[in-house]
Amino acid sequence: MVVDLKANEVVTKAGDVQFYAPESQVKGKLILTNQRIYFKTIDKTHTDYNMEILPSDIRELMYFKTKMFLQNGLSLITRNGLQLRFVVKNRDSWSQMINRMH
Image (cartoon, rainbow, N blue to C red; front, top):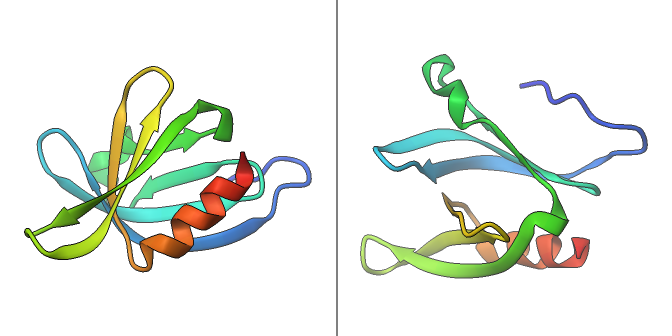
């Protein structure tokens, strides 16, 4: 999976995730760099869910549980009110690294 990095941009963390899209769950990669967050879908039919999130666009980070008891959900609330929900491994680590970007 290729992401076009900007000048002086370095990948700091990447991992397999599921994005909770309105109609379904979409598998992909969450890529954290020192400048932004990328979500890239694995399935070519869902490329409309590919996104780039700037740290200044994030208003809040919240946790959520999946299947009533699994603590692996990370929700990014954007400044314009969108809620982007991801199922990640080691959500505490993701959250800490994203918070450091602010």
